[in-house]
Image (cartoon, rainbow, N blue to C red; front, side, top):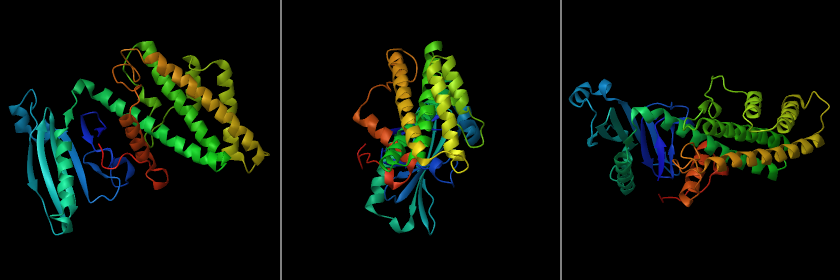
Length: 333
């Protein structure tokens, strides 16, 4: 199984590793209730989970439980029509009202596969953990961190494909992205080390559509200031930044030649390796600390078969195309 965190850090659930979280990858879904899940391959139904403040959805229950509902139990009902069958699940836990749905085509009524899916749904519902309000920001920030590392893993598939096909412009663009990512992650760790905190500066790890984020040049400046890189590395990265912009924006209207791209791509790959090693140094410095994303508390430095499969699943969520799809173990958990 792999954990899923509600985007605001309110709750955690365990879903099968071969199930996809639908909201970020489909235009019809927003990052808000209901949250949708289904198998990557050949889905026959969709599971949805919603959470709302108990005081808003069930004020009488909230009034009767001023310290929160201590035990989670689910009440089942049905909501069917001529096209779809819907199994409904209602629950209350701590300060949250919960609604689960499993929806499938009416023609599948009585299908053994639906019965198996409903068993999985019941396992998911039993796995619900409500995060204490004081820890919800950290839970949401850790989820952004995990999505960031999944996207970084996915970018290596793109880079390897570009190298195999000798697509030099693509190599330059992706390597620049990865250098930026390594520096951002190094900055997060450096600040945690300096302040001895679990706080994650997610402004370095996520930029929503329409949001003004931290630009690449600012990342270079911050990395130099916090000794993530030295002046020589800063100057090299700045020179590469100018070359990359020339390649991307002025290839046609400048004197740059295609053969020049080979040299620029090679320089980017060399710089990428140096930044990877710099990041590894920060990870190792934090590994024995009782705080931070790579500290002892969260155990992210340990590499297991399950952790690799979860990372592959996260990369699959980033790609959402078959060319780069990794096997995450089929029906295994």
